[in-house]
Image 1 (cartoon, one colour):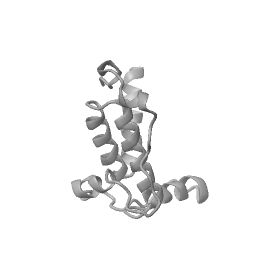
Image 2 (cartoon, rainbow, N blue to C red):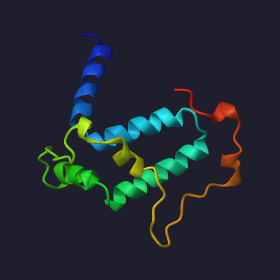
Image 3 (tube, helix red, strand yellow):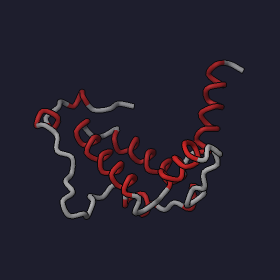
Image 4 (tube, rainbow, N blue to C red):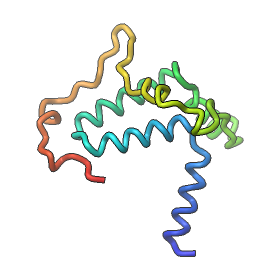
Length: 123
């Protein structure tokens, strides 16, 4: 097996162990982010991280921390446990603004909002 094949195999094994919800969230982030500027991407990622840390929709982040850092059993119990059980509407909730009093969306300096098209991701 080549080094590239080894890397591909290791990556697939890592993805199989990851939270199904997180996989779908980040796939959508990558797909949509290809067409957005850096400022828009940073705002969206900030929202998603806030939702993940708040834990209203899923406790997968905390479950992953438990499995790796606390119990060290490396056996997280994801909820939902399979990709096909994560709906598009579940994923969309992470992209919405937080509905908490006092919470503010990420505000970037003006220079981030006026970047040229060449600053957009071309993955």
